[in-house]
Image 1 (cartoon, rainbow, N blue to C red):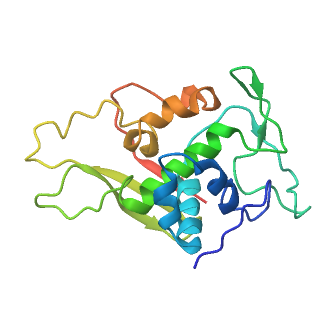
Image 2: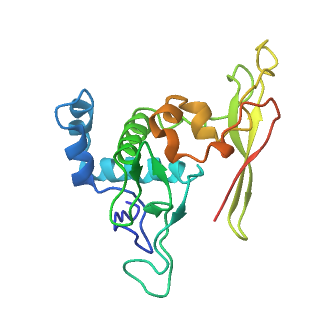
Amino acid sequence: MAVFDATLSGAKATSYISVERATELVADTPQQALWDTLSEDQQKSALNGATFWMETLSYGGSRCGVPSADDPTKPQSLQWPRSGVTCNGYTAACDLIPYKIEWAEVLIALQLHQNPNAIIPPASGGNTQAGVFISKNQLGDLVQEFSEFSNASNATANDCSDCNNPQLINAMPWLRSLLGCWLDEGSISTGNSRVILRVRS
């Protein structure tokens, strides 16, 4: 199993929240039944995947850990916790993750567990639905490049009014409302230009 690390402001953190915190969040909610069916390894894997995709978004303020909480020679690995941003009267602090960021991670994790291709569907041509696929991998500086696949049989495949948004927002548009003012709204566009999403290490 991949490494799972939920150290707050940690140099090697892979998740904003721990399995225990995620379990607390889903208690007495409609999501609890599904979460409880997952093994601990599955929960950790789903949280890692959700955090990876949340890291592709831009947020207000700046990350806290320079240096990180557990290694004075390295910065924190993830974008949260952050400081210098206020949302709905609540100012982000370096000693916790905002509630809506936590909830977003859990909801994305559950969706990815049910459908690992919920954000990037596999590309195979033929009758494949229009979507996004990995078009380039590069070992040096670990660059992944994502391109849009437009199926010619789909009359609306070339209608992509939100192609310049992060793929996570395109796949799960409800996140924009959930994350609200924690997001850097300048990074979320409603224009018509097409872009390729690149994820760099």
